[in-house]
Image (cartoon, rainbow, N blue to C red):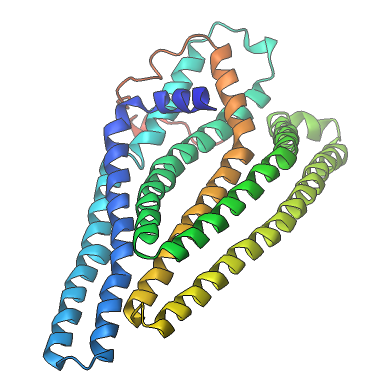
Length: 346
């Protein structure tokens, strides 16, 4: 797995700094999410203790300034950085680099299935880009604040922190068990999807011949059969995942129930104020959401890993990867409109 991650990151080497900046901005935004309950808790405590209205308004004004920075300015800066540095430049770099690499290949096109190659490359470029986005936009920005939040819970609210740790560990152990069960199924599902895509591409590439030979019905039936096999196996795999997800939801809900019960006991004993109770619930929910998001990303990676491996194998079969890895983004010269043939022109 680590070797595959290194290879994927190598494909986007010119964008490492940009991705690190995007990840840092998202992490800052997630850290801001943790401060929102503190502002709300302070205001609730001030109202419960009947503080002066001017003091409460000052707290609300401070919270408003924070909301503007956190909810407006930071997302705007993040969006501008993303648009300028990676959102379109990254996929362009990967697509152009891989295409040039394949065009330089000395393999005989007639010696391999170009329809399958097209399906593998097109699917691979999409899932590789998704992998990088999920790593830098979800995993890294969530894990670091999640660990910090868990530390704060264990420091300020030890019993609630222990409950969250136990619930999170049970969730992770259930996911590890799921991986051993579903991983072969997702691998087979990806193979069936490639078979479906290959026949679909074959039909369009030989469209005229199929019509001339009167094989329209047979071709459609064959595609329907391949699609049906893929769909039935996908539904079977999906049902197994849904059963697991139902059990996982019970773990999370029981954990939330325990944190509420303990928090209410702390408030009744006078250990927590209502504001602290709100913050503890928000932070414990955040940590559990981090675990849940990590599991969802892991599921996505498990589903797409066969496609990534097939993509890398296809790239390796074309020879050593040079320009496509670590090079500057290609400069594309616009083609005059008059030199582009009309669609369908011979």
